[in-house]
Length: 291
Image (cartoon, rainbow, N blue to C red; front, side):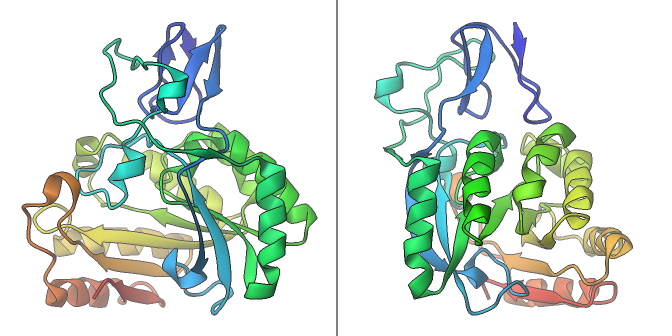
């Protein structure tokens, strides 16, 4: 057994088995990334789409994603790639629990860090400030973030990371020196909610605190009706964020039916605005999203 130290799951993998993220595998006795540079999406996005509204507003960022995620949110907006596994060229995968993984195979194109950095530089003329690692969970492959991020900094450009923040302090220490701006999903203020999606609230809190000491941070909370929309949760969440820095922007975002929650109703717009108002009692910069 070899233990992966990238996230809080710390999957212990036998030879040939893949972690819960579907992106890391035990090969020759070592845990290796199998989604390194394997991109499923690439687009030049407005920085506000990340969402980052208080970091270089009006600019664009070359946004890329791969496949896999270490959480299992039933409301995932990008489940087609976050819940996907390696393509057929990698062979059948076996999960950490020994069962064959029935995840759909991702369609990918390999893009090296050097090629991606060069592409980012070419797009400077269109307002591009650098690279955003986003769409799926980028930090399950910290190697690609660090290798590309180093080259982006050499070119005088910026690195943006959009993440669930569910990684170990060791992983945070590796990637944060390359991060200029981070948007972190703080999905709820309930440990029980995080348990439902396969995560851990304290891990995310630790990551947010570390990130806030290293780079520009904004936080997103997707409001799912009946799951994390209690007013006292927003009170606790916003009070804790304010204890770090009352100037950290918080995005209170509307849920739309998606993935395994396609039978749910969208969040009432009035509920989003009401929760945002509660957050404003503690934080200076609160933004409603998807309304």
